[in-house]
Picture (tube, helix red, strand yellow):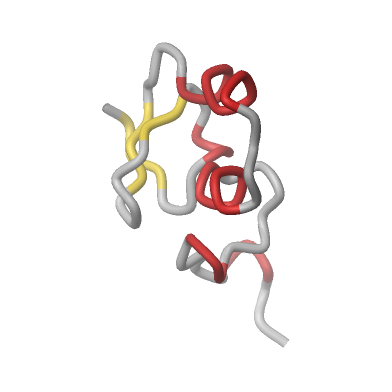
Length: 64
């Protein structure tokens, strides 16, 4: 079985991570929740192009 940390998250409907923005948006997260996650962004997702304050909220984060 592959190590979970080594698996690549493909984002969107494939995302299994509860706090990734792609999943929050797909599952109808409230505007307040999304705003809290994206305010003052420091990271960019190399999969979907979304930005977030914390790298944990993105599938494939890269520092801005």
